[in-house]
Image (cartoon, rainbow, N blue to C red):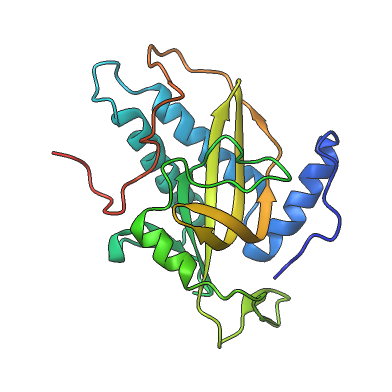
Length: 220
């Protein structure tokens, strides 16, 4: 796994961008791609009808973010086991999209999905090796998990606060109940300034339904 021996200065956005790009490159991802995912989800939320049920804005935002990630990467979707996964072509890791809490995208924090981990993610994190996984280098210079290691779980989390979309791609290592307490690696992305679309949807800080359920289905 790629480790950052020196974290960037959060006040140096160019340096932060360069650092994040270097961390994402072995995973075949870019800052621009992930920024678009987070922004597309937020714009979908903005467009939700004010007459919709209370859980609709968060559900729509999460669903659009998953769709956007899959469309842009072209990676395989996986809806088995009650969780929406998107698999890298190597099958060495997969990405789960979730809305994050207010510490998402900041250095020196330990963010958790806004709605908690729920059963499926709790079980997956419990299966994560406690030690740093071994990696093999392919002929193309890519780092993939050793064949003896289980596929890696990466969380892409996003959070809208004070006119800015914060996001990160991070690999959880340990949890206590419904909160992540340790990461193998975190890649906070530079904050993305965001302007609301023309909408009457009100986003409230108490909305705790900003992520897909363990069984990712639309309510009837």
